[in-house]
Length: 370
Ligand SMILES: C[S@@+](CC[C@H](N)C(=O)[O-])C[C@H]1O[C@@H](n2cnc3c(N)ncnc32)[C@H](O)[C@@H]1O
View 1: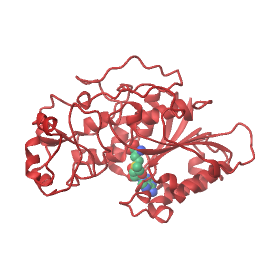
View 2: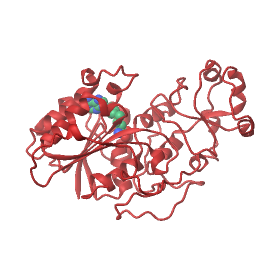
View 3: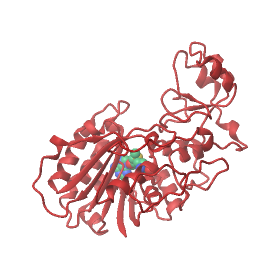
View 4: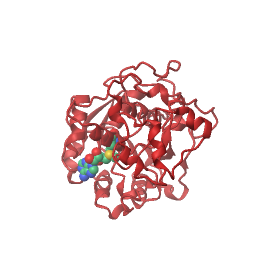
């Protein structure tokens, strides 16, 4: 059994991914300052994360868990344009830098370390500090930039992932950073066939009685003269990245809107009249519901009416698998008082559990990674 600590746990995407992967692992403690996220985490897993600021955790507080593995998904704002790209100078990078500084001081450093972040992290000072320290402390490192689309999930979410594990024997440092490769194909060798991507219709709540409450308010659409946003159709096999602003008036860049009416309009003309946003009001545009976003993020959920089914998956093989809706338990469970906008915010901050699960199985916990 692999024991883990989960830092920046949010709604527990990295924890769910352990179950999706079928890895024999347990999370001994999670850490996050966000009380709303912690309510969801506690409701789902039956254990409340510590809300102590991670930048104030001491060696003693971490050492006592004696874990094999650290799971980390630190804040991404220091590495995004919206967050001004201040990198290590950004206060929000401090908890990650603090954890890196603790690694060498631990009497029982973790055997494995997994980190998720946004694209751009790969060119940051924070990443440089991290890989230099891991290399110095004798970890083998694998880095990649991948999107769920490459795994057969109809959602684009290009993210940086790092898998590290302690070498069995000390090896002189080869200055990893000079020769590092960031893999951008899945599987890394790019040999096998690409995975089929099911249509979005198979992720939808077609009989949700309150679906009208998810319609995009007309004022969000009409204010967007000559601004494009992503519109997708049930028959399409792609959605854009859902961010924490999804469901709000930030329609331009926060994620796809679903067209539910006049589907033939697009099919005939193959264009939208962006200069005349009133014309878009006939399209029945709606937001994806939090449940639908959670499905597109491959969170473990109860089976649903129109879901995609693939052949049985084989957890034991270390070969990459075709995406299949994960039904392992626990399912993600939002307490009732968490509003739709809060759910969207939490999901937008979270990650794709299938992608992470595959990286756990095939790279992090695989002695002979692809
Ligand atoms: C990118 S989100 C991680 C989301 C998570 N992987 C999930 O599946 O929901 C980053 C998280 O770090 C938390 N966080 C940011 N700074 C923190 C700090 N100093 N101490 C503890 N948690 C912090 C935020 O509350 C947020 O939930």
